[in-house]
Length: 365
Image 1 (cartoon, one colour):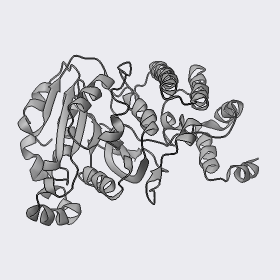
Image 2: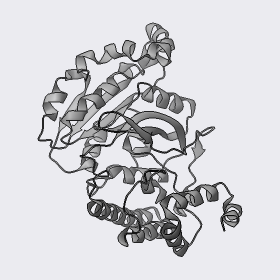
Image 3: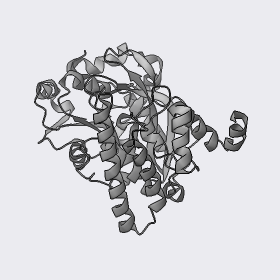
Image 4: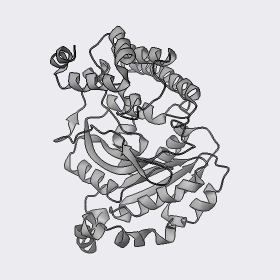
């Protein structure tokens, strides 16, 4: 595993001279990056007892094709008791290392955001890592589209040995351009699909409206970000390109083999989301009841054991499908999940969103 001292040398070893980095070398050799209109990016890495992964996460930021002058790295250690501090402190001034009492993921992200100076905020889980062109791709998107507030990209799921398993959102398609966030549709339950934390990048302007994240999100703080950022975001842009790596390992909470524990935590998180959504709607004077009803129907499925895992292995994540509205009754939801299986449910979702649901249903039955 490369050390902090070796990180920038990896530009030549990563093959970037033949891709994005080639034209950037000429640009940066003649122009001060800070005066070139390139926004500063704050990368917030939250970690807890992931000393065996943290170096790879940090190194993947240090070797980005975006100029180092335009990146600040903030590592928030949520009370680790392993060798995380030893691994992180050797990077010296290349990063900002903040140690705090253990209070959970939301608390760690809040501390990172409070200390961030960038116009763009990119989150990275400490057991994941990015492709070298991740931040440059995001920055180019934000510079090109002035009203863009959320940039999302795909992730490759890998195992503990970095072996490829699958793409996280296999049917995600590139947008022709940013999509305007339609708050009315969101309030009716039609919430866009999001990747996990490491695939989401926001403008600081957007996040300021919803931060700090309530600290009762000790895990799944990204669920809060995905939902509540839509109340203030102007445009969102998707890239089907995998610009990062989502690692599955024995310590992943959502990859834990104990389905009872997973189900309990899913129910807990969804319950908190609904409660916060009710309070948020009252604060803004918005009718959020249709969205709450949608979330509540899925919560019932979790409680009844009809959903036992957050991500089906052969389709995209139920955690994000939970916020995807399909104009079917709750009864039909249950029937599809019982009779057709989770994979068939997403075929219904896909064809419905394409406006072909009735024709497809007729062919099936």
